[in-house]
Length: 179
Image (cartoon, rainbow, N blue to C red; front, side, top):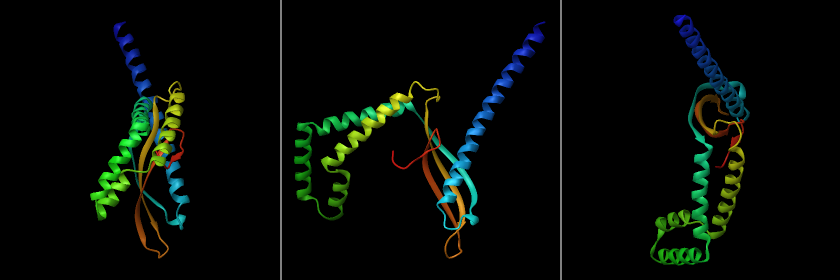
């Protein structure tokens, strides 16, 4: 009697694990076909397309992403407060007085204008709100895949080119151009 119960439990466990593997493989197959179609649509000569490899680099958790958004929102709130703007502008003016050449250009790139910060603040608030709406759905907290596709194709000069496409793809197979 014990052996029959053990056999039934083991077979149930093995069958359960097998169906989970099939769903993971089907998601990877869907992702592979979707990103292949995306890459082919961007080529001048789609007939020459040849798949080389596909790497799924990372999967982001919704709660972790919300935590990152909240950190960015706090930074923007502090920076965009009246005292923060005054401190920032005086710091930038003092620093620009003695910076020259490429150092000055790099400093300007690292310290965008206040309008850009305001735009980024609004984008992060919208992103955090949309992520909070997703939290109660049954997505297993998967928000996006960071994928890297390596493929070959022939360019306009008929030379064989090995190229890499790195994109962020949402769980519902939409390309994200900007995070």
